[in-house]
Amino acid sequence: MRNLKIIHPPNRAINQLIEAIKINDTHVLKELYQNNYRKIEILVLKNSGTIDHAKDIYQDAFLAVWQNIKQNKFQPQNETALNGYLYTIAKNKWMDFLRSKEYKKTVVTSKLNNFSIKDTHLDLKDDDILKENRLQNVMQAFKDLGLPCRSLLMKFYFEKKSMNTIAEELQLDAASTRNKKYRCMQKLRKLALKEH
Image (cartoon, rainbow, N blue to C red):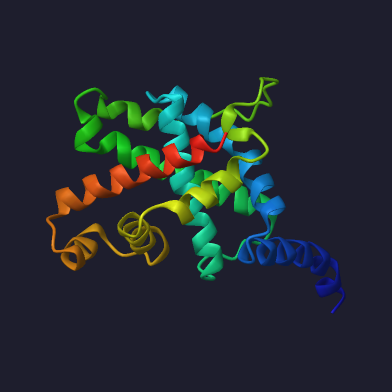
């Protein structure tokens, strides 16, 4: 019983964090978003990407983590585990992108084995993605997307359906569905940036 009392306070803190994420607490979501973006930007820039790539990949990863928590698919033991989870999803999404046909022509596959990031705290000016209203803009932009895009992104990120399943539902081929998803993410990004 004494052991349970020792580990209870950290569990309570992480439970409060998870509950805050589930109810879309803007302050908590914004803090999580801002605290983790820079690491992903460094990762992408060091591995053949651009700032625009980093923003797209991070938004994809953040939405995936946010929805996984809301659906009880991920229960972190502490905040560090949550940060690590977000980083891992973003890293995997970037590796998938580098392996894609779209990028294969310009990237040597061996580069994928050199993923690294140093945990250095850089005193750089905040990128526009870290501005106060950035997360709110992304959330609002998602609401403002047309129904076809919102539906497609919900199926992929929130319902975790495969692109093939979504393609069947939309009566499209897989390539067209992937292109549509890409265009929807671009539209989401443009809508979010317009709010600045």
